[in-house]
Amino acid sequence: MVDQRIEKFISKHHVLTLATSTKAGEPYCCNCFFAFDAETAAFIFTSSEGTHHAQMMMQNDRVAASVVLETRTVGKVQGLQVTGQVKRAIEGDKMRYIKAFPYAAVADLELWRLEADFMKLTDNTLGFGKKLIWQRSE
Image (cartoon, rainbow, N blue to C red; front, side):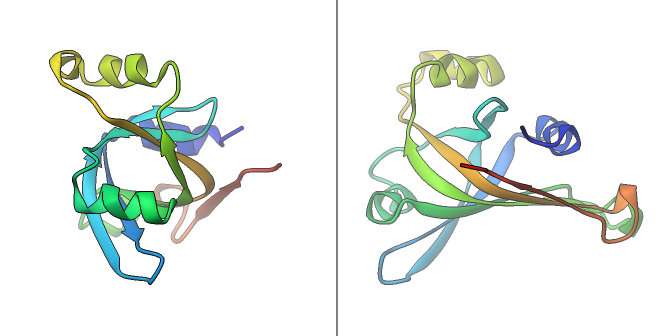
């Protein structure tokens, strides 16, 4: 189960930066709107197979991501780093995504899910440099 403080942070945001790479190590990043599935610790996002990052994800499904609060106030700094595996969306993901982004109901969605295996939230509101770690146990 994901720490409730991490879930709360995630629930306040809707854009993640996704970092992909090819098997040869070529890096790339992009920004994606996401909906979060707390039960499976998965970030649901849409991206066409024709995009550069989707092509890379199909070569190498191990990715990293971040979600960040932009602030210049040190005491408010918060940022989440994630690693995991990208897979095709599963049943229920489309409804979760549409609930978060109702306008997507009319779009041709190619949905993916980043199933997190590690999350680290740096949250200065809990104390300078305070880090909350979550790891999938299997």
